[in-house]
Image (cartoon, rainbow, N blue to C red; front, side, top):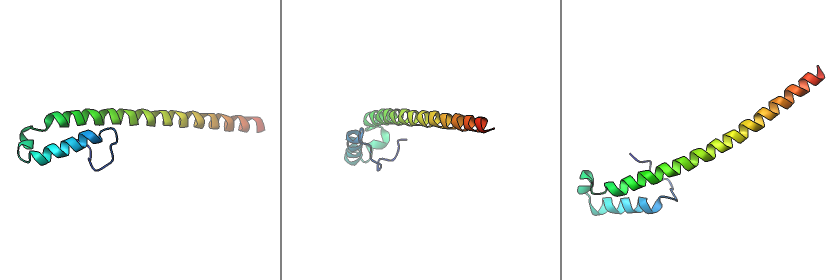
Length: 83
């Protein structure tokens, strides 16, 4: 299964359009694999898109965790200095 084709996929839009066209041109043979090559390429494109999004999210989370750790250390240092 592939993700929803209604959502925007800028990197994969050409393949999405090609798959939709294949399904329109082959309404019955699509069930026996006439569009499988396009679908495999689309799945590969979606996997690359997901990997890029995962990396961006991981970088964002690491930056947040670093800032949070620094904030906690400053707060602990201030508490220790006032005690």
